[in-house]
Image (cartoon, rainbow, N blue to C red):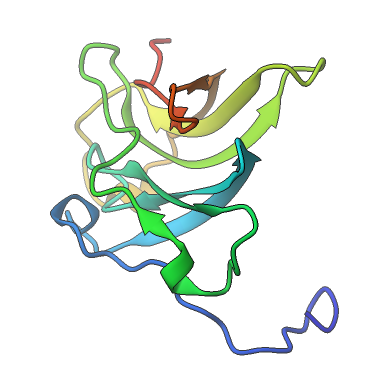
Length: 151
Protein backbone atom coordinates (compact mmCIF):
# COMPACT_ATOMS: atom_id res chain seq x y z
CA UNK A 1 0.00 0.00 0.00
CA UNK A 2 1.07 3.54 -0.66
CA UNK A 3 -0.84 4.68 2.44
CA UNK A 4 -3.99 3.91 4.42
CA UNK A 5 -6.24 4.79 1.46
CA UNK A 6 -4.12 3.94 -1.58
CA UNK A 7 -3.20 0.54 -2.97
CA UNK A 8 -0.09 0.43 -5.13
CA UNK A 9 -0.61 -2.91 -6.85
CA UNK A 10 -3.67 -4.46 -8.50
CA UNK A 11 -6.12 -6.29 -6.25
CA UNK A 12 -5.76 -10.08 -6.02
CA UNK A 13 -8.77 -12.41 -5.93
CA UNK A 14 -8.14 -15.14 -3.34
CA UNK A 15 -11.53 -16.83 -3.24
CA UNK A 16 -14.80 -16.91 -5.12
CA UNK A 17 -17.93 -19.00 -4.51
CA UNK A 18 -17.29 -22.40 -6.06
CA UNK A 19 -18.84 -24.92 -3.67
CA UNK A 20 -22.61 -25.47 -3.55
CA UNK A 21 -22.78 -24.36 0.12
CA UNK A 22 -21.29 -20.96 -0.87
CA UNK A 23 -24.02 -20.30 -3.46
CA UNK A 24 -27.29 -20.76 -1.56
CA UNK A 25 -29.48 -17.70 -2.13
CA UNK A 26 -26.51 -15.54 -3.14
CA UNK A 27 -23.06 -16.37 -4.49
CA UNK A 28 -20.99 -14.77 -1.75
CA UNK A 29 -17.49 -14.92 -0.25
CA UNK A 30 -17.21 -11.86 2.00
CA UNK A 31 -16.02 -10.42 5.31
CA UNK A 32 -12.59 -11.97 5.66
CA UNK A 33 -10.77 -12.13 8.97
CA UNK A 34 -7.28 -13.43 9.68
CA UNK A 35 -5.62 -15.46 12.39
CA UNK A 36 -1.91 -16.37 12.39
CA UNK A 37 -1.00 -19.44 14.43
CA UNK A 38 0.89 -22.70 14.18
CA UNK A 39 2.96 -21.53 11.21
CA UNK A 40 -0.07 -20.73 9.07
CA UNK A 41 -2.33 -17.84 8.14
CA UNK A 42 -5.99 -18.77 8.53
CA UNK A 43 -8.54 -16.64 6.67
CA UNK A 44 -12.22 -17.05 7.42
CA UNK A 45 -14.97 -15.67 5.21
CA UNK A 46 -18.75 -15.70 5.15
CA UNK A 47 -20.69 -17.40 2.35
CA UNK A 48 -24.27 -17.72 0.97
CA UNK A 49 -27.38 -15.74 1.82
CA UNK A 50 -27.56 -14.14 5.27
CA UNK A 51 -30.32 -16.47 6.44
CA UNK A 52 -29.79 -19.89 8.06
CA UNK A 53 -27.59 -20.85 5.09
CA UNK A 54 -24.92 -18.28 5.99
CA UNK A 55 -21.75 -20.07 7.09
CA UNK A 56 -18.03 -19.59 7.67
CA UNK A 57 -15.48 -20.87 5.18
CA UNK A 58 -11.73 -21.14 5.67
CA UNK A 59 -8.61 -20.64 3.57
CA UNK A 60 -5.09 -21.31 4.83
CA UNK A 61 -1.56 -20.62 3.68
CA UNK A 62 1.90 -21.12 5.14
CA UNK A 63 2.87 -18.07 7.19
CA UNK A 64 5.98 -17.53 5.04
CA UNK A 65 4.08 -17.76 1.72
CA UNK A 66 3.43 -14.90 -0.68
CA UNK A 67 -0.09 -14.15 0.56
CA UNK A 68 -0.86 -12.21 -2.63
CA UNK A 69 -0.40 -15.40 -4.65
CA UNK A 70 -3.78 -17.12 -4.83
CA UNK A 71 -2.00 -20.44 -5.42
CA UNK A 72 -0.52 -20.25 -1.90
CA UNK A 73 -3.96 -20.68 -0.35
CA UNK A 74 -5.86 -23.91 0.34
CA UNK A 75 -9.64 -23.69 0.62
CA UNK A 76 -11.74 -25.94 2.83
CA UNK A 77 -14.41 -27.69 0.73
CA UNK A 78 -16.93 -27.56 3.60
CA UNK A 79 -18.02 -24.81 6.01
CA UNK A 80 -16.04 -24.61 9.24
CA UNK A 81 -19.04 -23.20 11.13
CA UNK A 82 -22.69 -23.39 10.15
CA UNK A 83 -26.14 -23.11 11.69
CA UNK A 84 -26.93 -25.36 14.63
CA UNK A 85 -30.58 -26.32 15.11
CA UNK A 86 -29.56 -28.22 18.27
CA UNK A 87 -28.22 -24.99 19.82
CA UNK A 88 -30.82 -22.67 18.27
CA UNK A 89 -28.25 -20.56 16.38
CA UNK A 90 -28.59 -19.71 12.70
CA UNK A 91 -26.44 -18.02 10.08
CA UNK A 92 -23.10 -17.56 11.85
CA UNK A 93 -20.84 -15.17 9.99
CA UNK A 94 -18.91 -11.89 9.81
CA UNK A 95 -16.39 -12.94 12.39
CA UNK A 96 -13.22 -11.59 13.95
CA UNK A 97 -10.64 -12.93 16.37
CA UNK A 98 -9.30 -11.90 19.74
CA UNK A 99 -7.78 -13.55 22.81
CA UNK A 100 -8.45 -13.67 26.50
CA UNK A 101 -6.65 -10.88 28.41
CA UNK A 102 -3.73 -13.21 29.22
CA UNK A 103 -3.33 -14.01 25.49
CA UNK A 104 -3.51 -17.77 26.10
CA UNK A 105 -6.94 -18.57 24.68
CA UNK A 106 -8.13 -17.67 21.18
CA UNK A 107 -11.68 -16.36 20.85
CA UNK A 108 -13.96 -16.32 17.81
CA UNK A 109 -16.35 -13.34 17.70
CA UNK A 110 -19.23 -13.63 15.20
CA UNK A 111 -22.89 -12.87 14.73
CA UNK A 112 -25.87 -15.22 14.42
CA UNK A 113 -29.63 -15.26 15.00
CA UNK A 114 -31.47 -17.37 17.54
CA UNK A 115 -34.28 -18.19 15.11
CA UNK A 116 -34.28 -19.92 11.73
CA UNK A 117 -37.14 -18.44 9.73
CA UNK A 118 -36.99 -14.86 8.48
CA UNK A 119 -39.90 -12.95 7.00
CA UNK A 120 -38.79 -10.98 3.93
CA UNK A 121 -35.26 -10.19 2.80
CA UNK A 122 -32.67 -11.55 5.28
CA UNK A 123 -30.41 -8.54 4.75
CA UNK A 124 -33.15 -6.32 6.21
CA UNK A 125 -33.49 -8.42 9.37
CA UNK A 126 -31.54 -6.57 12.11
CA UNK A 127 -31.41 -9.40 14.62
CA UNK A 128 -27.96 -10.84 14.06
CA UNK A 129 -26.41 -10.56 17.51
CA UNK A 130 -22.74 -10.66 18.46
CA UNK A 131 -21.49 -13.83 20.10
CA UNK A 132 -18.10 -15.12 21.23
CA UNK A 133 -16.69 -18.54 21.96
CA UNK A 134 -13.38 -20.29 22.50
CA UNK A 135 -11.51 -21.68 19.49
CA UNK A 136 -10.17 -25.20 19.93
CA UNK A 137 -7.12 -26.38 18.00
CA UNK A 138 -6.89 -29.75 16.25
CA UNK A 139 -3.83 -32.00 16.43
CA UNK A 140 -2.84 -30.91 12.90
CA UNK A 141 -2.71 -27.26 14.05
CA UNK A 142 -5.93 -26.14 12.35
CA UNK A 143 -8.71 -24.26 14.15
CA UNK A 144 -11.87 -26.03 15.27
CA UNK A 145 -14.63 -23.44 15.60
CA UNK A 146 -17.23 -26.02 16.58
CA UNK A 147 -20.93 -25.22 16.55
CA UNK A 148 -22.39 -21.85 17.48
CA UNK A 149 -23.06 -22.05 21.21
CA UNK A 150 -26.58 -21.73 22.60
CA UNK A 151 -27.76 -18.49 24.21
